[in-house]
Amino acid sequence: MQQRSLSAVENRRIMSWSERLAAHWLLKSIGTATFIAVFIALYLYLLKNPVFAVTEMPLTAVDRVIDFQPLTLPLYLSLWLYVSLPPALIESRRQLINYGLAVGALCLTGLAVFLIWPSAVPAPDINWARYPAFDFLKNIDGTGNACPSLHAATAVYSAIWLERLICEINRSTAMRIINWIWCIGIVYSALATKQHVALDVLAGAILGIMAAALSLRPAAGIISGAQQKQPLSAR
Image 1 (cartoon, rainbow, N blue to C red):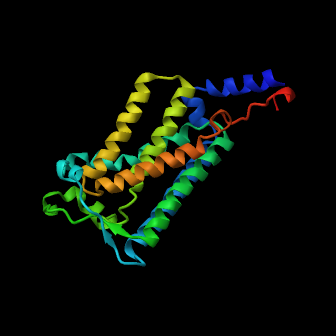
Image 2 (image 1 turned 90 degrees about the vertical axis):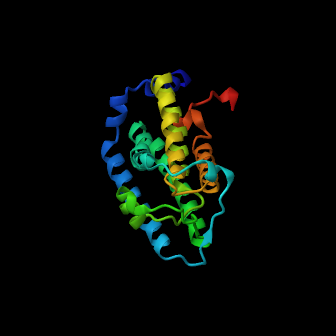
């Protein structure tokens, strides 16, 4: 029985990229789209309707060193593609539910902080008329709901999950490096686009690490989508 269970786990771990993408594709598509839509609706509602006075986040030396870099906007926006990759590569329904519950808890924690303690980024000395590409971002997102940065939180959470999933599939060093470079780039772009300050990003990264650690804690069972059964003598 134990050997059969271990074989099943091993078979799941060598599923190809295409097989993983095809697994539960309808649930993934509907679930991801619905989750993003609900999150954006709640996020924007809190952004437009703060319950308490909005706190302006302080600048640090890091914020003064990193100048406004408009070319990082595509990298900032690429988060929405990036966060869709881990659920797309998940193979089992149980694993998918675990992922969704953890990222849901992450986002709800951030939204709860925005409700109780709304915050905003200090207005930078930038002539936004020179950067029309930022118009839609400023009109929709603005610089509120600053701390913790859910941009950084979800990027770090996704990076940790992708690290584990890539190791399951083929342990590709190149893919792992690309994953972390992309994550760091997204986090950096949150500062370079002046959407967040360093304290926002730090708080968001910590939140993302905590959520990932909790969701991946029983790694052998959750990541593979199955619990390894121990013999009676080991219980």
